[in-house]
Image (tube, one colour):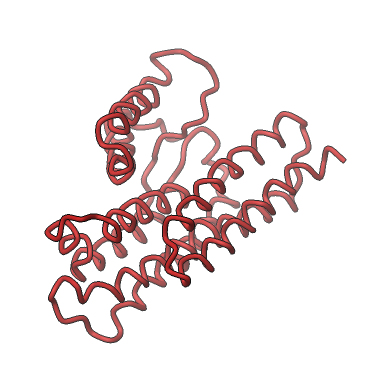
Length: 234
């Protein structure tokens, strides 16, 4: 039975992703964000549980990627699609084809996950932006744009140029040959993990002062600190 537990957690991640997609098309964006947040926890727990119980399997590995594609690729892509549909609020003309650019997110997420499954270099660090990080960035900006009372902020976030830039930049980062920190701590050594410790401290500080708006700067902070404390490529 213990060999089934990690896969059950992975399938729960998948279920959250599917429910998040339904919530997005029901215009319940807060619920979608909560579901993706729960899926982030489940995504951590399935790998942690598999390592703890020593029940790694090829099926579990592939299932994890399929679940991540839906939750951290398809759901953010559809959220971006809805953001593009609302970008008329910025006052700028929006070409009819533009919202479909959002589909680049699930496409490049699939490519990123496939590369991860066959890339033996990504044991101690990531190469390219992980799909959960991409989802955090898109959902945090999306919620800010949907629910802010500041019309200027709404106009900036929902501007079609910014949404296009966000889509293209995120898609490129997903498959970029860019070494990025892994948040998995093998020990508590400051020198080996200082980038992670600093990131966690800054995230806590930002959440305290900015609350949910802090989510929008977490991924830029992660990218910046990964460049400063660049992982050693082996």
